[in-house]
Structures are given as structure tokens and as C-alpha cells.
Image (cartoon, rainbow, N blue to C red; front, side, top):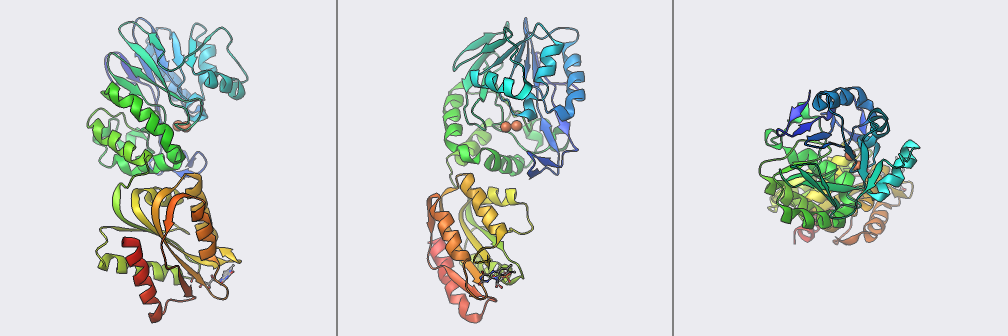
Length: 393
Ligand SMILES: Cc1cc2nc3c(=O)[nH]c(=O)nc-3n(C[C@H](O)[C@H](O)[C@H](O)COP(=O)(O)O)c2cc1C
Ligand SMILES: [Fe+2]
Ligand SMILES: [Fe+2]
């Protein structure tokens, strides 16, 4: 059903409740929303399409919102298929419609659809405006706020920021609420989404925030997740912290990868020691079983991290390897990290972890590296105490 954001701005996005993995990698227990909007003025602008998986719903809602009118523009903020899945079909359905996007997006359009829609496209640059009547869209380039061709747009009359993937969140709107204020834990799934999807691109997100803040948007309309229109400062502040790799929550995140339970036992002990030493918050993840994307989120959320892992084939047990590799891909940085390795004949996990963290920016691995031989013994406790002290120092 079409939803009203205002008299002129309608929501025509869709909920995808049958998706197994978003981007073939992220679990979405609450489904996923692909947002799309229509602005009705003297000219009619459609803001993005949705994933082709949900084409039927989107087309029906578009028709309902248009109520017999024909769209003049299709604004494409991002060419990734979760948003551009219906672009070619919409262009065919509405021959009078002009596609508005960045020059790079227009190149990608040909790659994805095999069609250039020559004579029917308008390439826009930083600061270009598109008058629709009483409403005017102003385009702001947002390269690498996920992909290089991304832009956002700001509607000047109602001060709506069409934010593309920025300020997005996992979860269908029927589950997590249409407006942000109905969502009592927006940050939880927004943070998992941000760090896994945009984590590597902190600087581009910072650049976008610098352009957006002076505009003082009244509404943020992202391509995923609820429409935000209250307490925008909270969301903007979180995005500032996240994109500057700042600490959101003081505390230690303990991530462990154990084969036979010995390392898991050490992780529990380390948590106990940290709490006893007054650590404000200790969060923990079993890298062999828990959602890795959630672990990535927590690595960025907390100020400090401890990684404990079994040695494996003269290297590092693969769930820990995958986790650290992902952190490296996502530009994990500016953190203190404590390491514990476990091994039964030639412990090797610590060496690999040190090498991996050395390749990351401004990650300090604190001493001592604690080595456990198969199972934790009473004589290992002082080393764990020393490690906790070093991490909290
Ligand atoms: C497939 C496999 C490969 C292993 N490779 C090594 C190794 O290269 N060096 C080593 O010291 N221990 C190695 N181990 C032994 C474990 O690292 C060791 O038993 C450790 O104590 C396991 O901790 P956990 O109880 O947390 O699983 C390996 C174990 C398995 C199952
Ligand atoms: Fe994207
Ligand atoms: Fe997206």
C-alpha cells in the first residue's frame, strides 16, 4: 500500500520477507525493505526502484501513487540491483520519463541493463538542481557511500534528504516500523548494516555528513529501513561516530574461536576478570556459531577487543581468520586489541593474528600475547590478569 510521507511525497517501497541473505551474506531475520518514493508536483519524480524480486508490488504501488499521471523523471541514486532492479522496465513502461543519475551511474546502467536509453537520460553533478514545481531536488555526490556512482538528493521545500544507502537498516518496515520513532532499537540493525556494508568507507561518509549537516534536513528517507523524521541529531551523531571510527560504547568485545571448548573457557574467564577489574561492559561472540556480521559490528562499537583462537594447521582456526580478514576489509582501525592463542603442539594462532592486525591502521596489539596449551591451568591466570590490565590501561 502507498504510504504518505507528506501531501506530495509518497512511499512506494516494498518489504521483502522471503529473503534468505541480503547481498548473499547477511541474515535478515526481520526481512529487508527496499524503499522507493514518488514526488508529485507539476512534474512527477520517481525516486529509485526496488529489487526485481519485488517488482509486482512496486509496480502496483507506483501506479496507485501516480493515479493516472505519468512520471517525468526517474532519479537513480544508486545502481546496485537492490534498487535499480526495475529501472529498465520502468523506462520502457513510461516512454516520456527521463532517467536522472550521475555520469558513472549511467555507465553502469548499460552494464546492468544492456541499454543506454540515449536521449532519455540526464547526468547530474554536485549541486545541480531539478525543479519539479514547488519542489526542487538538489543533488549531492556521495561517491563510495557504498558504490562509486552514488549520489543523494535534497528536496528543498520539505527538506527531505533522499539518502541512498546511508542511514539504512536491515529489517522490513512492517516489522520495524515505518517511521524511525516507532523503532525502539534502530541502532542495533542500523549499526550491523553500516559497518558491514559501508564500514570501509568512513571518509566518504564523513564527506557526505559535512555537506548534509548545514542543510538541516527535516526528514531522512533512506533506501532501506525506516523513514527518519524525529531526533535526527541522534542518527546524525551515530553516523558521525561510526564513520570516524570513534568509540560508541566503552567496554571490551571478546571474540573467540574454539574447536573443543578450551578457548571458549578462557574467553569466559577473561570476561570474568575484565568485569572484576571494573570494565564498564563486556560483550562476547562465539565466532564459530554467532553471526559474523554481528561480531564485526561489535568490534567497531566497543573501544577495545580481545580475540582468542585455537591454532589450526600451523595457522589460525578459520572462523577467526575469516573474522579478522573481514575486519581488515572493513578498515577496522584505531583500537587496542588483546590476543590469546591456544595450541596443543606448536601454537600458531597468535602469530597469524598479529600479522593480520599489523596490516590494519592504528591497531595496537597489547602485550602479553597469552598462549594456552590445550586447556587453561591455574598458572595461566596471572597472564590473563596482566592481559586484562594492559587492555584496560
Ligand atoms: C584440524 C586441526 C588443526 C590443528 N592445528 C594445530 C596446529 O597447527 N598447532 C597446534 O598447536 N595445535 C593445532 N591444533 C590443536 C588445537 O589448536 C588445540 O587442541 C587447541 O587446544 C584447541 O583449543 P580449543 O579447545 O579451544 O578448540 C589443531 C586442531 C585441529 C582440529
Ligand atoms: Fe548498496
Ligand atoms: Fe542498498
